[in-house]
Structure formats: C-alpha cells, structure tokens
Image (tube, rainbow, N blue to C red):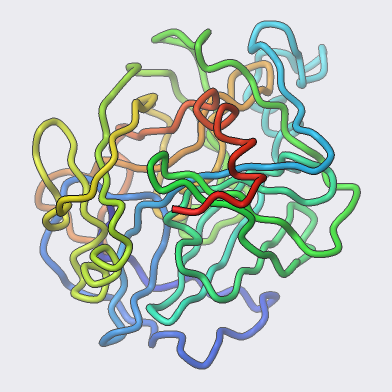
Length: 316
C-alpha cells in the first residue's frame, strides 16, 4: 500500500546514495486515500511514492518479551508519561535506508537483540541490494536481510558488527484495549526519533496488501503507490491475484511517511505493534498528504509468532 512519496530525505551524515538513486523531485500523481508509512523513491522518471512494507524479526541471543501488564520499562518517576516512554524506548528505534534497482526507501525499525537484530516492515527492505541503519546515537551500520514474510508484512534484518544495542521489550497485543494510551516512535520524512502519542482507536481492522513484489514495484514506478485494500475498496491500483490480509491495530497517534516499521508502544514502554500504514484524506496529493489520525500497526503478537521462521531465513 503505497503512494507517491515526497522527496527522499537527505542527511549529510549518511553515506552517498548508490549510482542508481533517483533524482529528488516531487511528483504530482493522482490523489490517494490510504498510504503506507515508508518513504519510497522510485527509480523511473525520478518520481517518488509512499510504500507499504512488511515486518520480520529474529535473534541469536533471544528477544526480550513480556506481558504488557507485567513489565515496566519506564522508570517509576516517569511512569505513565509520554516523556518517560520516549526516553526509555527511543534508543531501541532505528532509521533504515534500503536501496534496490527500483529505487530507495526510508523507514524505521525496532531493535530486538543487543547484537543487532532489527524488525521492520517487509516493504521497507523488499528486494534491497543495500541496507544501512542509523541507530539512536547516530552510528551507521550496514545490514542484511535475515528473513521476510510477505504474508504478514514483516522482515528481520541484522546489523553487521553490532553489539551493546538496547533491545526493545515486546509486549502482549492480546491485552490491548480500545482507548489505551499509546506512543509511536519512528522516522517520518527522515526525521529520526520523532515521537507522537494518541490512543488505540480500534482493533482487528482488516488491511489487505499485494504480495506480488514485481507488481508493487511497477506501481511505484508509475507513481501510483503500493496496491492495497481497506474497507472493501482498492487503492493505489489493483492488488492482483496474490494478496494477504492482516488484522491491524488502529491508532490516532500521528503517523507519516517514514514511520513504517517503527514502534507502537504502551505506556509501560512495551512494544505492542509495528506501524505500517496511514490513511490520507480523499483528494490529498502525495506532496501534501499527512496524518489525519488514522494509522495502522501490525500486532506484536503476530511478530512474536513469526520470529522463529524469520530467524531461520524464511523468505516470501
């Protein structure tokens, strides 16, 4: 599920893009309704597009998991505050830049092991030939894909020669209730470490995406975004005959392009979801589309169940 993206964010501290990186200009494509929250720059014609992505995870040292009601990651003095969640969890959220023959994408990720396993959306790293990750302290690492699961929009990557990272605590999305306060952390528009907050607006929202990677890439190149279905309607083109549907957590925490793969967090500092998509108003063009308080996240329990396969190098 993707849309025409704003120009790719340029950070002087990042290495220069590969030779095939697209020219950076805004495209004026057709209006879209729902857009993924990754920033994707298509290689054809220098256009850009919002992209939907998938999330995977894995660990050779073990992932920290918990019940959302049993673990308090946030210090007692800051318990129940957005500031406390941000201070405690931000070190576990990274910015991801992935390059492929089709262009480049910018998204977010969640550190799940101290030695550099990171989960993100599949659409952030799908088909990537080069991946670079910037951690909270500004350190940049090369990374490789360990496993992907397009049926759940998840992916697991591994940072090279990483150690001593702060792993996030994976909570229990089954315990999430409508009205719970939440915090989102990611890199919207390339603004690393951006924190927003809101509530859980709804549970079990059906979001359907295409699993045909080549079709999605073609749609990006035409400036139409990654195909998806929501509420019985298709957006960004035909999803094709190969699709997958996942149950998403809906939130009014502000999500924007670049938040894909980042964390949705409860007020105890536990990860309860992986942010994946946002809803834009009808008639909004990619250059002006922004959050209107309708965001979607993949439940963390979906990720936890998928971790063994992702670690084993699952692909597809």
